[in-house]
Image: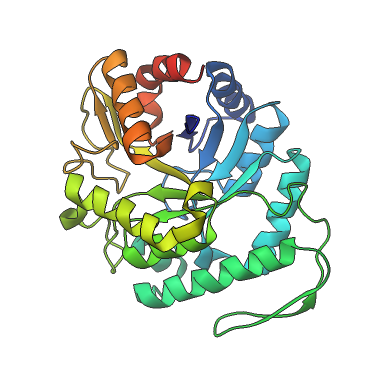
Length: 302
């Protein structure tokens, strides 16, 4: 039986002391991972600095991203940063990475938002570069988007062969890539190709189960080694969407991304999704839901 793991996305704090208190509170409540998103706009810390600070004030809590936007950094730069952070955190880093998608990030920074197919192809190459640079010795790569010439980065990550790699999304191309290359697959909604937000046509139970089937088929013989997860957008009682967030949970009522009801109702739903569909990693998307979700963690973490 797959072990439950619980994460929480934490975006910012008013000071270093307040940030440290948030990290320690998550660790004390039994959460497994503190996760930081990666956007250039909105109320969000930059990932590397925030994760380093969180790792330095905790002992057990893992730290990670949901997710690095591949277009923001060359993978050689990201590989170096992550190897350093994995070493400084004593092997507690989880590297979540995606294509980058939010139009506001690209427009605000004057970057071109390429079509989804181009971004996914670039992400596939980036994953190969990350794994190669985290390996032993010099690494070379010649792709359409990246070229690496006998680069031997030091330090190597403490975690061997590399820190856990998480990929996710809702589109079939990204899900197939995640199934083939990742350690963790986060099932979410497909986002619109123009970067305007989630695709409203992609919600509901049938779409969610189709994504799980896509992962199983693409993973083939490595399926049992995958950890399947999802982000929980609503907990306890339904609340209005945050004005600054692109999340849209209106069509997700029957999926594990919306968990309404009592603590025991939610715990039963999570057991169902783990036992029947192999989803064992649940990430709280909004800090406002932590008070409702923490008792569930305390019940199921044991």
